[in-house]
Image 1: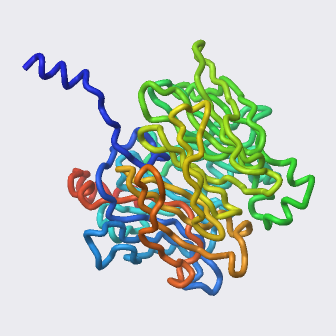
Image 2 (image 1 turned 90 degrees about the horizontal axis):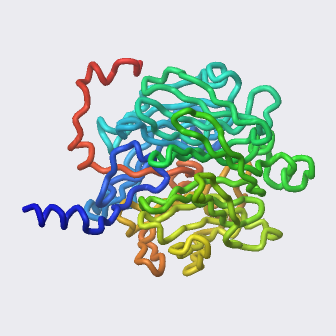
Length: 430
């Protein structure tokens, strides 16, 4: 028995896939997803015109709902709905609007096929001391960490991180440090006690038409060019890294032996490696060119496979996904390119690494128009070599709007969880 136990402990363990953008403080799910939750921006004259959470069937074993719209829940009005994330127990999904800083909390555990809006927070700017544009929602034990993109004074890039408890009560604001004031994403690596934050631009730019921003030399000066390394437990910035060109989404490597993360720069079209050195400090290095930045390909999202081998990179303007083998993180190697549509934004690989999902919308004023302004959720199979189409949902035809971030749900996971009683669960949700 002792020998068998030793062999089990010493044998290599394959890390099962999860959404690689999710918090490590949440319980992990393995196997087949049943639902894809898509946060969607409303369009005037399309459906009810409201921002909403849309549930799509994701399990081919349920053919009646596979690739179909199962349910929608509108939040009322248009708020530039953008990103969202589950709380630490995955019971609730938090989401926010970049325009007016509204935040919504949906209960997904009660009926995973039909999420319900159970809380609205309309005091984010006031409670945070002026942070606006809630972007990343990152689950912490007992808390939700929210990154801001802007501030309510001059609506530029100076911003901060905001923490709420799970009942929606404000805890604290952490302003980004001097000379690195811009914010975007935040990701924590608990075993290193380090958090990375990246930087984008403020309300004045992201709520303006993209063509006008690009044509305005003054506006183009107001994009972030730094990443900040934090002592996570102390919530203190300890190092500022120069990463020119607006570094966006951050993806930590998942394997225990890997102390690095990837990001891409929207304006300079590069893959960056952010790696811990032997002395504990971090170094940021551009390790690959994605495309010619003069053509404005606009890399907008990345997804890192659970074995740290593949990095999926979406470029909005040419509607393509490029897949890199990053087994050697210092030398990414392009292994596959797939055109997804006229535009593409978010990309998420599934828990088992066998499927990849894409959505089309970036920002309402940055999306393409006319025939190129298609809006979709598309699912592809991934066999380690190529992407193969599985299904697509036309969000304009369905009267849903502009799909942005997506998250996955599974019936079995929620059935296996034990939550507090209905009375306790409802406390603070009214």
